[in-house]
Image 1 (cartoon, rainbow, N blue to C red):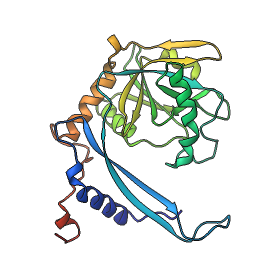
Image 2 (image 1 turned 30 degrees about the vertical axis):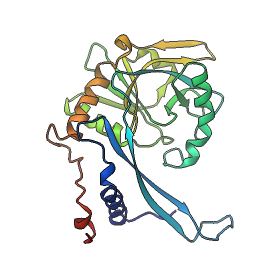
Image 3 (image 1 turned 30 degrees about the horizontal axis):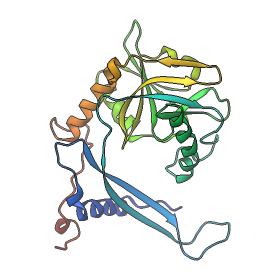
Image 4 (image 1 turned 90 degrees about the horizontal axis):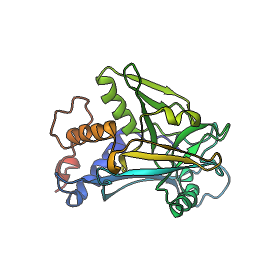
Length: 262
């Protein structure tokens, strides 16, 4: 697929949001307008070769963030590999998500809310959750460390980068490296992180083949310390409560100022 020019992509997002401004949730709510860009091959081309025509569309939909204070039980999926080494796991493509759904539903039937997927080469390294990124915090005698999987098979999450920026602002250590299943018990906190999901604490991680369950301290089912702090910090920036010191916010103008029409 061809790369879309930044100017064209930005204009599409501006128009989609501006033309649907009435669906933007109230400013003080936990809801948001989710933006979903999609590009697909079109036309009559059927040969096993790149298409000659592609369609880019951007649609938006109101959505609600998970309620603050929840924590989830996670299950490690070992009978299915989400992505392949040197594959397209680092790209936002539908093929990375659709095959996982049956395992997510199976996990829910067993009482779990989310699944964790391992690298397909060794089956020893944590890569990500079914639809969002894996982030952990390890506390010790020294300063706490933010631990992020260093894998070419996962998306480079915008929300993870935001968390990393907040963490570095405190002068604390960031470790981007392989994360092994065997070290899950050494983490103070584990979180599932994504644009739509926000920052959700993980209460436990279970591996059936061992069998073993690692439990994390989420007081009375609520978020642990860092998950709560990051959620508060990011919400404050998103809602303009504090200055946007990172340059993350982008202003969408009324439609008449976007394309000149009324």
